Image 1 (tube, rainbow, N blue to C red):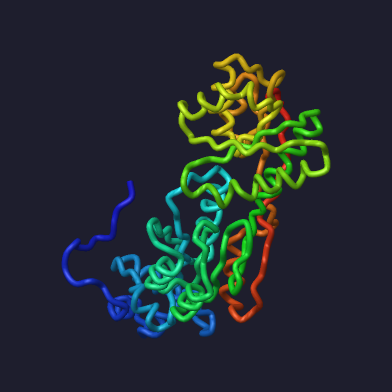
Image 2 (image 1 turned 90 degrees about the horizontal axis):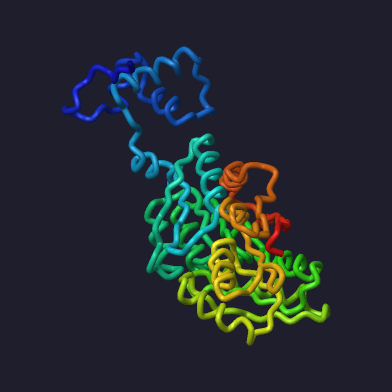
Length: 340
């Protein structure tokens, strides 16, 4: 059974002077050790003694004071938005947070709902982050990027379908998702293809490029692409399914697996056979899609970068004066199952 240090939960907050006294070193040495300053040579026994003293006293460095000295924190802000996100995004955030922790950064998810781009940038800047990884749903402006840089951010990075001038970019080309799905359907002999366009707020920046990719692949192939507005509701799916015979479609790319499952059930309820009458393809490769009957064909998306993303963020922080970099983040392939 582990035990906490034998100390009171009340009383004065321990300081670096207390750590220095217990460890028998100067306050400067405490600062060098706890801030991992490699510019000063300190023996490993001394480093260990300082860390043990800090643990014994329950000393925690004052982040605000540290940021005042350095002009920034070790904080990387990961803004969040109030829109549905798929498994690739969750994996991206998890891997990035884990990697940043390994490199002694603190990842902070910041709710940005209701803020426009410049308001969001000012709110993030108040935290004095060393870096920001902004989602593509918040259209950063040159003014917002300037505010972040003046506040001490050494790297401003966008995550989305296209780069933003003045910032580094992790590009997730959603056109490839729609193009891959429609290319698969064309190879299966389908020529009249619907593309689901979610009506939920915030999904347009992903859905529109997927539609554009679908149209680009279909162009010149004798294929017709029909956008299909759909809310993520059973009633909306039922209305669309009831109109299916009039649409004359023999396939549908349903934006993602969740919309595909919703629509496929509605089609089956009105007697449309999948895939005989209409082939269905989703995206994200969710486990639930494999449990359906027929099993759902899908576009699988994976990170395309060989190195951990946290290492990239760290390099951009350590070399802040370089030109903006663009990195393709998405690799896609179609998983063919029974629904197509």
